Length: 294
Image (cartoon, rainbow, N blue to C red):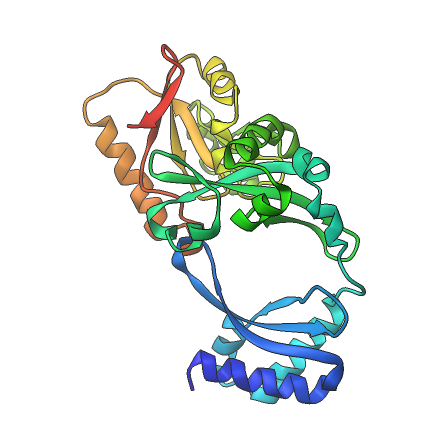
């Protein structure tokens, strides 16, 4: 049984238990870097939101010998615990003046996400795509983010240029930039390396949520602040889509090759496939206030 067959059986079993009060469907969800996840949506009739329950781990459990009906019971238990009560007020998100202050962006790999980006008003930076997001804090769904799509712009009656003007203006307050020494980030995990790491000007940058924050060095004025802290030119090492490492840069023989090999090794061995940002290393040059691929 493949995962699609598994998903359709789960849908049928859940629909049988919950009856006509809900609509149950199987979906394939395109995630970052072209990764496809498999999910079931359970939508109460008369409501406009449907929880997405991902099936990939449940399918692994099934392949490892867990009885199908036990998996169905686990999914139903999860749904009953997390299902929102009521509908989301979508009218709020139809008024651009109400949401513009919540705009920010994430960065993802352009080549690995061409299909995902087809409906998104993104902008390019080197090999990265900047994807517009809106912070949401719904009384039913709690905090989260919504990806801005091209259809949103039609509803808001604004251009892509107007959207990005608002994003660059509001991102620094919607998801503020953070920087901390790598020892702070590692916490107890870095104790053994503390004598070595404490001597390095190596910092982790992200946003306050520590999610989708690797691109904060592209916020207006942020690279200048990092440069001031580090004393001039610096490099950006993409640790994941969520954070990046910055450190001073000085020309040395073999340094570029070493940095690239380090990033590629981290991406292949440490970072999960869906969280990989890029194999590139980026250089900020203080003299002309620009960032480029090293």
